[in-house]
Length: 90
Image 1: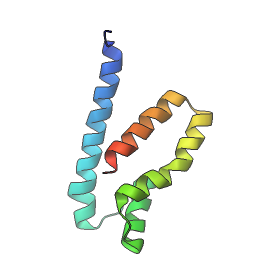
Image 2: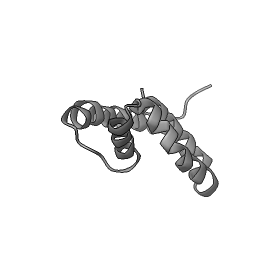
Image 3: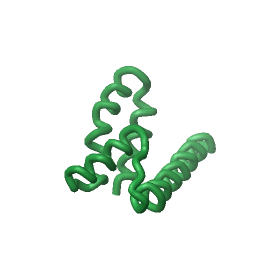
């Protein structure tokens, strides 16, 4: 089975985005005590308050967004979002 170039390009872009987000989170935000916006910021804040790991908090807080996206946007986008969150979390 031959992989279509468009599918490969989409996953390549997703991988680059995950790497950049991970670098920003682990090299800039966390060491300096900054907060981010959205789910990542809420995860960092809950980590500071409760001490739970961000790798656990981030996917848990994202669950409502997965559900909303599944029923309103498209299943393909939700699957890509799920892959992104699970790879970014550890």
